[in-house]
Length: 174
Ligand code: NI
Image 1 (spheres, protein in one colour):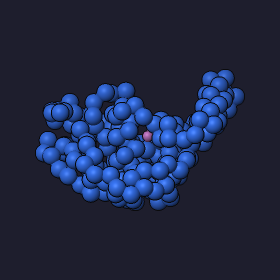
Image 2: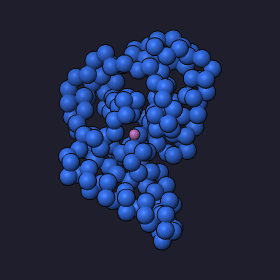
Image 3: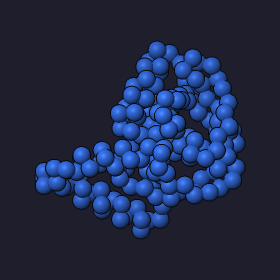
């Protein structure tokens, strides 16, 4: 079990800052290469309801339904993924106190997506092999274009795209 010390609190603050800067809806420590069990989320329209889950555990996962997901670690890819629609999660908060929470809708999707990151799993891992190959090829091509400088607008475009991926539309970047 993670203990909540100053380092974990600082990590959570850094993750939130990074998530908001990237206009993402959620972020896991794994995504910034820190291997501690911390995830952050904000699914509010106003972007003013930060949530921190330290050492999250799923207590219940019920129902199954598709939702469109994107990921800050897989830029500009949005695909439908089947996940539990109702979950109950237990975690420690920033204050170190354990809490439990029921979630459905976008929040349930985000929590499951971010918890997968802690296991090294990406949402594209749920897709068919063919789809994963297409995505890999596209990302590879974009990387090459960026490294040769031929597509100088690539980063601006990806910022604009993830900017559109806030909860207001149905394409959350997590
Ligand atoms: Ni993600």
